[in-house]
Length: 110
Image (cartoon, rainbow, N blue to C red; front, side):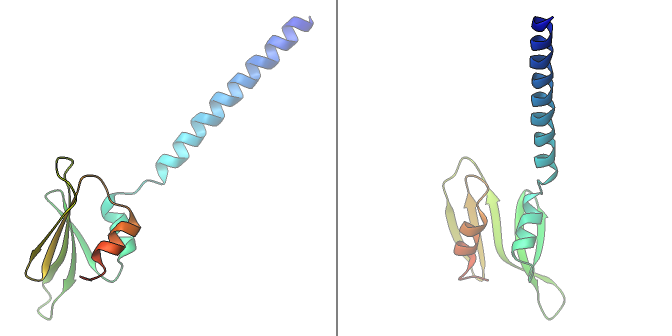
């Protein structure tokens, strides 16, 4: 009888561990947001638009048109790259940049 009790306790502990680990995985997935939403929360003063896999940080000009200030592209085949086109700046990253990296890179332009 004691052997059955030990086996039952071990099985219950295993079931509880599986349920706990599965529940933890689901709750972290609900916290994920799109990259556009993350950028919008970081720069609320500006309008963030996503077009052709490019995130654009824009501001409204006096004619109520969006004026592109910063373009963010994620291309795994390129290194980090910064290109200026007049007032607009294009940043290319090999992976999704962190918030601190974006704040540091965009500070002179926003």
